[in-house]
Image (cartoon, rainbow, N blue to C red; front, top):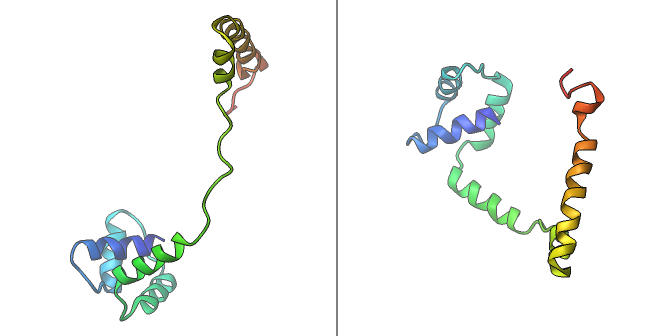
Length: 113
């Protein structure tokens, strides 16, 4: 991925056909050592191809992939507020008390101990 990112950065800078040494230079500027095998594989795959066309083709393929969810659950406070102001006011302190009980501070250990 880092090799492709360097390739795309060079493309944005105007270098339409970056060489291996160009990509290595970009990666070394941020302290990353290029992996020869992956770099050569990337360059052989992209040789003679327009990167903008490849991105557009990929975008069209991704557009056909279903990416919807089941939707979110309604907010818990919405039902209480719809029932009446008193019901929502009574539930609020109880919810705060539960949060305190579930706190890791009471257990004597933390997440990074």
